[in-house]
Length: 72
Image 1 (cartoon, rainbow, N blue to C red):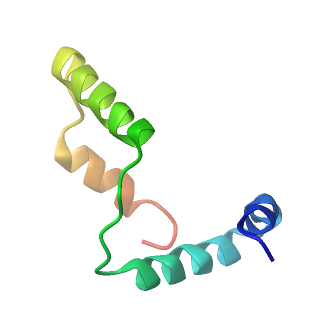
Image 2: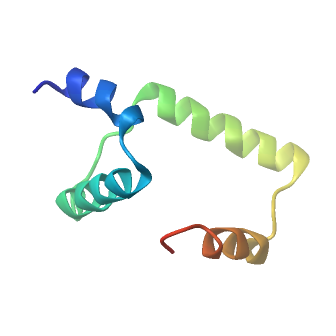
């Protein structure tokens, strides 16, 4: 199965299967250095500029939000 075929099937999977895939990919990539694409770097720069201009969310709010996510 090609990467394109796999990615096309992901939206049809139940949340539990997606979580398993996410966790497995994380374990497989652990310790690897990933190269950021120009698009990703541009998005990070844009987010940083937005944060500088508009402010951000307090860390405790972020932690509470993440703690409320299923599977966390």
